[in-house]
Amino acid sequence: FMLKKRFSRALLSAEVDAVKVPDADVGNSPTKIREILSRKRYDVMIIRTSAGTKAIKKALSLGFKTVVIGTFLNARAVAKYLANRASSVGILCAGYKGKYFAIEDFLAAGAIVGELFSLLGHLNPEDQALASHLAFKSAKDSLIDVILMGRSARRLAEIGEEYDIQESIRMNVSEVVPVAFKNEIRDASALI
Image 1 (tube, one colour):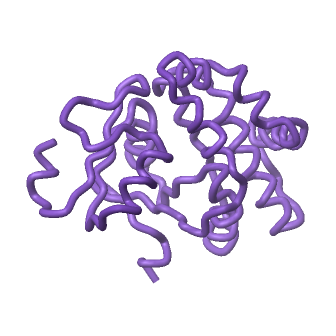
Image 2 (cartoon, rainbow, N blue to C red; image 1 turned 45 degrees about the horizontal axis):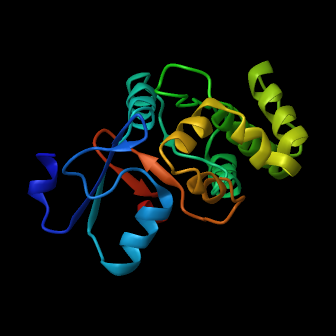
């Protein structure tokens, strides 16, 4: 929260266990974030999540040259970015609370792997990547039903925020490719 004081127009998005942190402007609800951004312009968005922030820090600490953030929303854009730049790709799923398997992360990884298959024609994936791809192919026509059975969706339903699930599984609606660095995330298009 100290970081927010350094910027005059910063949006603080912070949650713990899917609940907005006191003094944050918003939790990590994509619906609520979009509503706020439609009303006011911010120069910086500061993000703190239960799992995503830890996963990004872990990937950076492992020394990966490039760390991009992908979801269902930008699976194709992420795959295009990776296909043009990387000879080897690893996908790290944030998981539930940063500790437990999360079906939506696994399926989103599968969506990205599927987009890589479509772009490159041939891959030599590790078994986990292949399993995520096959799971996504199997579930894509009933994605919402599958994800609603998972722990993360049940948690969102408990706190009355299940509306975010439908928002979060829209396929390929964004061309933004977030690239993570030590202390910031930037859109790949701004790095060219």
